[in-house]
Length: 183
Image 1 (tube, rainbow, N blue to C red):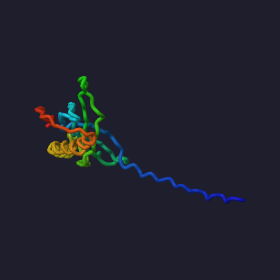
Image 2 (tube, one colour):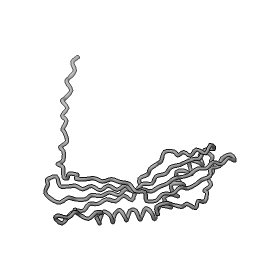
Image 3 (cartoon, rainbow, N blue to C red):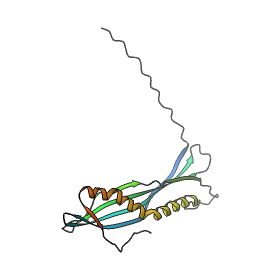
Image 4 (cartoon, rainbow, N blue to C red):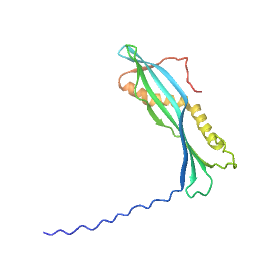
């Protein structure tokens, strides 16, 4: 029995879009906006264990200067500010050793970005920091600092508490005089 040759397969390669801009420089950094250590007493079967919930809100900033690929035109500054919530659960063992589980990082929704021309007077560098980019960074940082306590409480209530309850552990918050850092 003869089999027919399968038809030829024609694959078209995607046409690359022309490059619109060339990256001149990029600066990425993170800053802790607010952090808090919440001491906890974990209780199960009459035994108590000391624990600590470490939480932080940090902001990752990416500033990129781009130039038109054609070479004609002025440079532009593109910025992105992305806030994150990090949580880490720590214990003090009966031997006095302190250790922490791996930190969990959650991207928060308050991400902002923008772009502005970097029009500089000939012979002068553009202002650093750029006023528009800095205003966006300050707005996100201010909003995150204002919401920090609520974000920390929600994180503890929705993530840590259910995990401990499932293990038959009750939680008692220990009053702390330290408070939050970075406010």
